Amino acid sequence: MPGYTHVEGLRSADVQRLRSTYEPLAESVRALIDATIRSEADAAEVAAAKAEIDSATARLRAKQIDGAFGVRFTSDGDRMPWGNPAIGIRNPIAPPLVIVKHPSGVVSTDFHLGAAYEGPPGQVHGGIVAMVLDHLLGEVAANDPDSPRFTGTLTIRYLRATPLGDLHAEGQITRTDGIKAYAAGHLSDSEGVTAEAEGVFILPRWARG
Amino acid sequence: MPGYTHVEGLRSADVQRLRSTYEPLAESVRALIDATIRSEADAAEVAAAKAEIDSATARLRAKQIDGAFGVRFTSDGDRMPWGNPAIGIRNPIAPPLVIVKHPSGVVSTDFHLGAAYEGPPGQVHGGIVAMVLDHLLGEVAANDPDSPRFTGTLTIRYLRATPLGDLHAEGQITRTDGIKAYAAGHLSDSEGVTAEAEGVFILPRWARG
Image 1 (tube, one colour):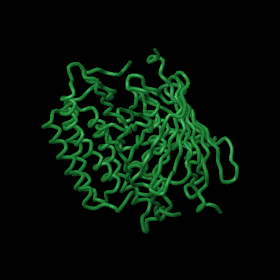
Image 2: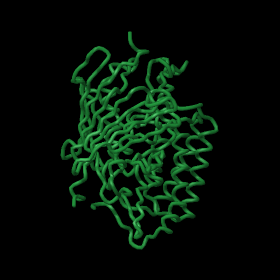
Image 3: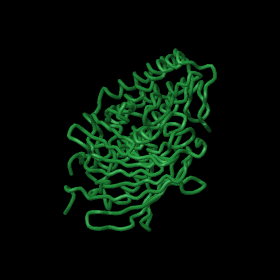
């Protein structure tokens, strides 16, 4: 599995410790992102805020990994996709989505999108709708973490605008055919479905038996 | 145009001033996002960084707009989609894409995606690929800022993995039919095309003549 890193000697207890250190940091940065978009502070206050931010960045960068986060596993097999822009608890860009896999095979997520995800005024950017549905259907199509399926084709139908706020998405496999899995899902607000998606997901060559 | 705000008395010169205040702030937050994902700093250093971040957020929030940013216009007609997650210069989630409209009708963008946009290890998240192409094709389909077209259907074909790094995307209208515009485009790295997209974009009811 190229790029999938088993971190030697890292156990489940260490994961909890790392999570308790880094998850609140990412939550603080999410609040900062929102404030950065919405602030009306004057130039002097913005400069003072920027100095604090740059200081925080320097502290964090004093010891950091080379390159991107990748997908890490502990010796106990825990998966840590913490840098992922949809679900990553360490990625401030991620809402983050919390994916629930139901016994029925349905995969769902309830989440909130604020100012950082706005396209047309008050509405979720169409590309963010696509990102959420791509990720959700990818989770639907992956039969286990060690044999992920990657998106082959994704089609989104936008039925109406998706308002910013509390949203829900769900999907399920509709058919499998060898290395391919077909999945369908939708995104909805409290009034009903706003966008539908269909995708074909393919097992990568390196993960085929 | 619901939610499209003309800011009374705001002129082009004011826009330059606001841009010079807020654009460097968002750039600092982008660096912080990257550091938040990649840091290996210990719990004490992370706590110190978090305190600085929370202080910066409080400064920025002391004076802020209600709700999301929307799309603002000056009295001179300048458009400020600064909160947009694809192109917004004030949105730290945005790379941000800089869109170039060529005389030929082709619309293109050259951009860099780092750790914050990673799905599979070393590769761009499929949903981020979709977001970039959705936004680009939307820009292709919009004939002018006052009559935007919104995504009706978007189909992405992922030909191969898109590596993190320097990337290019371009698109153009292939056909128009009344309120609909058909657009096609692709995303590429230095080796060639990694994903193709087709979209149908629709003029919203409120903007029809």
